[in-house]
Amino acid sequence: MAEVINMPRLSDTMEEGTVAKWLKNVGDKVEEGDILAEIETDKATMEFESFHQGTLLHIGIQEGEGAPVDSLLAIIGEEGEDISDLLNGSAEGGSSASEEEKDAKPEAEESSADDDSHEAAEIPDGVEIVTMPRLSDTMEEGTVASWLKNVGDKVEEGDILAEIETDKATMEFESFYAGTLLHIGIQEGEGAPVDSLLAIIGPEGTDVDAVLKAQSSGGAKSKPKKEAASKEETSTSEDTSQKEVTTTTAQDGQRIFASPLAKKIADEKGINLADVKGTGDNGRIVKKDIENFKPSAQPAAPATSDKAAEAAAPVAPVNLPVGEESVEEVKNSTMRKVIAKRLGESKFTAPHYYLTIEVDMDNAKASRAQINNLPDTKVSFNDMVLKACAMALKKHPQVNTTWNGDTTIFKHHVHMGVAVAVDEGLVVPVIKFADQMTLSQLGSSVKDLAGRARSKKIKPEEMEGSTFTVSNLGMFGIQEFTSIINQPNSAILSVGAIVEKPVVKNGEIVVGSTMKVTLACDHRTVDGATGAQFLQTLRAYLENPVTMLA
Image 1 (cartoon, rainbow, N blue to C red):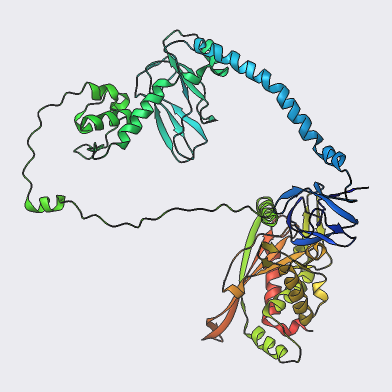
Image 2: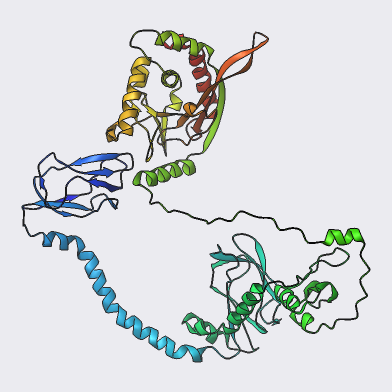
């Protein structure tokens, strides 16, 4: 009998998996224990073996595709076995939904036809529907900051209706129609998506309820002809080259207030706005001021001096680089998506704060050199930091905790997480009972776990259960940085590079070796004083390494 194989849960936090590679093809023989595929989880890419034997009859998830845990991954059975019932069973929900959509489609078409047949008659002549404009290329919704017209006010073309707050700025929105403001659809301080009903302008006495009913049923689709025409005119005028630019500053240096439509018309007619007297609100120049403007005789311009003529001479063109913009969109791996989710949850749920100290590493360098002179012994500075952290955690148990809502969980064991960079992102192998290990044992464990993490051979249980995490970027020359707490830990230590620099010792300036470390703490469990005391203990161990061997 055929066996259905679902996407396995390969870690306690895994919610979906991606098939990185299939090692068996449809039709291949499969034995118990054979590796079927490599599956990418939220923590690593792992080999998935078969618990059944037979022939691989069906592959449900192709290479590179992801699916939630328990989704159909494959079917194994006897060669030639009919698996249509198993496949139909997994697709039943989709087929029934598809039939319902087909049944509903004719009704929707009939309803749409009815609406189209009535929409032309539902909007009275002269009534214009004004919608929330798209005032920037990235604008998706806008907020009405203030209305400059009230219901019942007369509106002329070019009058400012409202100030609208976009995703980039607060901008004035002018009317392209003349009439009476019959209805305001979005009140001051309220926001709405682009193309939402903003206002209705039309003849005084129009039945607004009928217009609103027509607009909600789709009758406004064919109305904004004048607005479209105005936009076409605007785009045409913008495309015209070698056009004189109108000034918006008067001769006395004062700013000239004019509507965008008035500026456009003045630009087309070659009218200087400084010569026009505005009749709009606060002296603003509107469309009718430009149309009614009659130029007076202008005094002859005074002769310019030779220096002025030289200054007015055209500047030689500058050759600017010309290139082609290009982008590439790459699908995020499951690990990358989980890193984003987990670190986002940590950063925005745990109130982080940071404490930084600078540690004198002269004694640590000398001690490491002596230890590494022993046969078959190799200790790194990172091993010394891990040992110092493990011992400091035993003295400051409040740092070795987990926030649990109504309670705080104190961990009496020390499981040290070590951040390791891999090609797909970041993994955190865990060294269990790190406080009970020697420096050389810590070094061997870190080397083994990091190597298997990079070669994708690490097991899920070897990346679970950390109580504290260390992230070291010193090997990249980074002197100081901050990390995001690896929940459910309460703290993470960021380790920088050891640098040589002038330091003061015994009243004299000498060359010394120092290293900066930064402790990120969850303020819900670790107070500032507790974090500072932990760092003091850590400094004491690192500056006197012999105390870690006692």
